[in-house]
Length: 204
Image 1 (cartoon, rainbow, N blue to C red):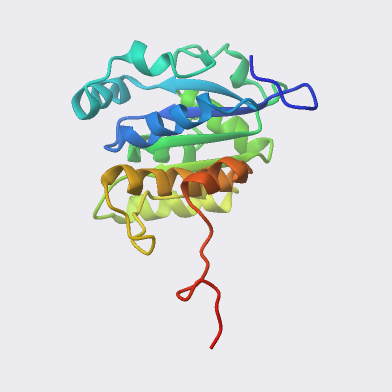
Image 2 (image 1 turned 135 degrees about the vertical axis):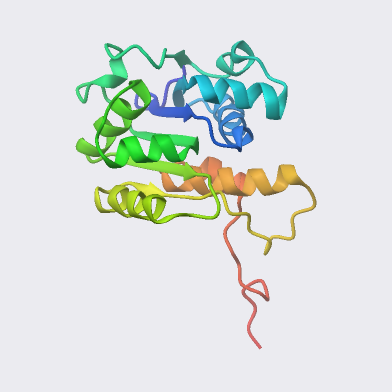
């Protein structure tokens, strides 16, 4: 188990759901697997498993091997279902509109949405990498509801100002920005260096 200098790892819940963009969740786990101060708790929905197979040719076991702890989405009695279990943040990468809607309305109908509900009620950071386009009014209202509850809606919109040369660089930049949001800036900045201005900070 990874340990920080203080003796306890930072616990991060990562959920992969059925929206396109499974690469974001996988890359997040790959980066965090190398971190000595982070303990990852992984959840994969049934539709998320399908996308992993279709988009990345990866089996569930391949992805689960990247995490420290794996939970079944039907196990409502798992540790992360309780606010008394100290998890520092949760990222849903990618987040389907179905999962967004369930979180927005507090349904807690599986362990992913229950863990998200716990994250919100305990005033911890929840980042939802929502994937859908175009957006209808229900999508927008659900995003507003989650934002009003303290969650962060983070669509994985690529940034081109770093002049990426590959899809992998686009993915890394987005993952780095998300890690920055959950207070893992030291890891995030290795993937997404801070903006230095158009002239690198130089003045005329």
